[in-house]
Image (cartoon, rainbow, N blue to C red):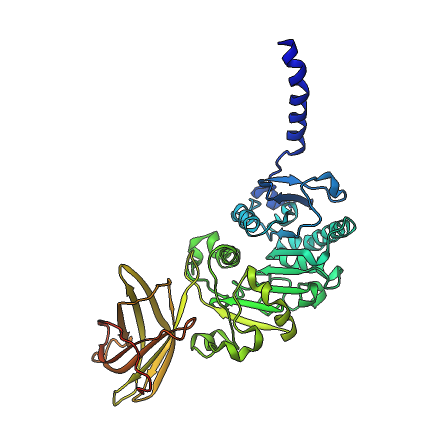
Length: 452
């Protein structure tokens, strides 16, 4: 046994040392009392790579060779969280890390500035964004000296974190590769000069997602491309009254993270450049060729593929609509209806597509559509799920919302449903009656061309 020990001891020692070096570091977990006292800013860097997807390694701010898993030839992505009034770690962080590393081999640095972000006093947290920005600016300099190309750096900033990324980018005169801003903070930044907030000159490419422009987010465009899902205000599925507690304040704001996460993994959501959300819902912005070579880009992580075209165009504002929960992506169809009623009718239409046991639902209710004799009415329908063809049945419900008048009938001469993504496969139905508030189910048939 003595003989065995002689051989085992060095092996054990080495193992112990490796474990020591690879001690997993957790995101700072604070609570309400810290939020009242306010905490001193200390920035902690947690490095994740494909070798250690679930174990954050504490990174040195000054000596990168002290963290062996950091590899200067790999691209580096930073995740910079925002205001944390309660001090708890962000619920989405683990999934964010996992999805990014599945997508790409990278150095992923989680910037934990929770000690500066946890404060009931938002003004204090805002002041700390400048300090956190200085801290990261120094780190990027160390990275540059270590051989990291600034083009390969992608900073993803959430809320206040978006402006932190902007401060760092500004210090490197647009040489950092990309900044993604997820609902950049509005309060105390709105109306400030470009150097005091995120702006398009902070990186080679700046993409911005706005989900709470009437609350915690920033209303105006801040990047080369700005996405406004659901118009940028009330996100579907989020509480609309204050009685739902904390969720009411943070749900719209936080939705930006969940939408972005889904863009890395599942949904390919197309975004439509448009002058307003209303015009988009009215179907006025579906002709993607009219927007030049960038067309209608795919929202989220992969929009970087259109980077050069979007930069040349200067600035693009886009809109899309989502489901209330994951999966957020919807399928858009244009609905063209020609009616034969003597009088003009106004109403809302709900459409259900059936394919076998699967069904998809769209409610066109943002404003009443106008149906006039022999005049084509075009609407944009967003279905809550994607249905593989063939569609064997359509159910339609027409509602006027008029309680006091006798129920109307709408005589439809032609209904045409065209998938926005695949215009070659329209569905049609000719000559049928829709009664107010009664569901009508029909089988679609191939469209006859030139039939008014």
